[in-house]
Length: 73
Image (cartoon, rainbow, N blue to C red; front, side, top):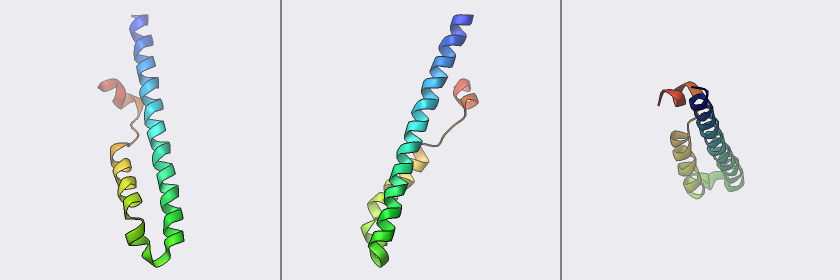
């Protein structure tokens, strides 16, 4: 019984760590997007589109879920 709990906690910790890494990657993309918007000025819609699309995709895919959700899976 204790071994099962240890394994579950280790899996939970691994999952939470991975989701936070992905969240930090999204934060880095957001910072690059801000720099692009400020640097490009009026042309930001065309020149920063790839970063914006990538950021939106990362936000959708990498939403942080609590450990309770992880345990239910």
